[in-house]
Structures are given as structure tokens and as C-alpha cells.
Amino acid sequence: MKWKLKGIFFVFLLFIVGCQEEERSPLEVRLYNADKDAVGTANFKEQEDKVTVQIKVEGLESGLHGVHIHEYAKCEGPEFQSAGNHFNPEGKEHGLMHPDGAHMGDMPNLEINADGTADVEFELPGVTLMDGEKSLLREDGTSIVIHAGQDDGVSQPSGDAGERVVCGVISLNDSTNEEQPTDPTESNEKKE
Image 1 (cartoon, rainbow, N blue to C red):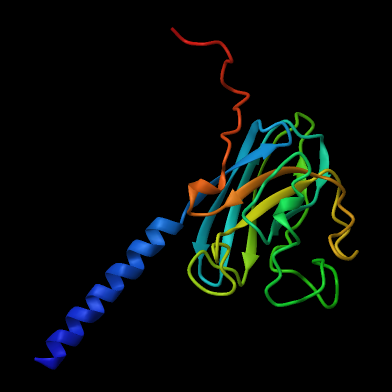
Image 2 (image 1 turned 30 degrees about the vertical axis):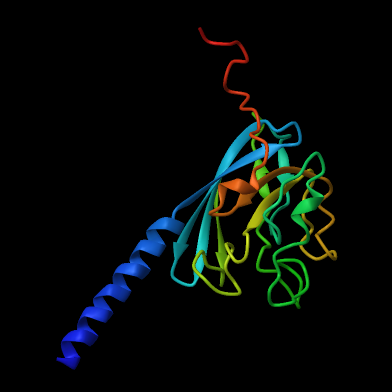
């Protein structure tokens, strides 16, 4: 009888974990500029020992742009300082090229094409969408920020990447977006 109860409990536990994973991965995040215009998406997907993020964005200046995960699930424009510092639960230095780095939220530079678009996939080793200290969804969540300039990979505390020009909230709680940003792909005219 004890083995049957343990078996039922184990199956129930697997079901709960499976449901949690379906709820959290993949997770689509809308990206907005300082004018609250939707400029793209970031899709986060749980993998073994990492999270992959597919970034699709438009309307940015061509060239290299720093992109990082930041510590708070807040994207208050126009400067997005509400997102806080880089996601860094291990207390490391900034930069993928720093000998004592990198922050868990550090990613390679995002290359924007001549037409202002990008469609790339990056990996975030060691982070998760599940529970834990290294979860992008811990507490209220985190955010993803694209900067105006290139991350040099070593300068402290953020790679000298310049202004924060795009932000998206990484959260399971939609209430973190107090105002609904506008979508530049939709007409402003009222439909009758």
C-alpha cells in the first residue's frame, strides 16, 4: 500500500512540474521603445542548464547594441532606469570578456541589420525560468534591455553600452505593465 501511495505521489509531482514548465516555457516578452511603441519580442525557452532567448526587433539603428537581462521587472520610460542593474545573483564582474565575469544577465552584442531589424538567438547559461535564485522569474521577475551602443565586454558596471533604448518585462504577472504601450503596426484610426 505504501508503494502505491508513493507511486501516486511521484506521478502527481511529475504532473505538477510538467505543468509549471509549460506555464513558464516558452515565455514571450514584448519589447518597447521609450515612446511605448512595440518594437519586437524576446522568446525565452527553458533548456538543460540554460535558457535560450530569441530576439526579434525592428526600428533600431544599425550596428552593434548591448543587450542584457536586468534585475527588476520594471520598464518605466523613457530611460528604463527602473530596470535596475544587470541580473547578477552570483556577484561577478560585468562582461563576457572579463576574467572575473560575467553577470548571468550578460549576452553578446545584438547586431542590427541595415534595415533596422534583427532576428537572433542567444544563450543564458546557468539561468532558469523555474524556481530558484538564478531564475529570471524570481520575485516579480526581471527585464531585458537593449542599449544604444555596443557593450565592450569588460567596462564596469555595464560595458559602456550607452542609453537604454528598448525594454521588456520578463514576468508571469501581466500586472507589471500598468499602461498598455501603443503598437506602431496598428492604425491609430478608430474602427467603426
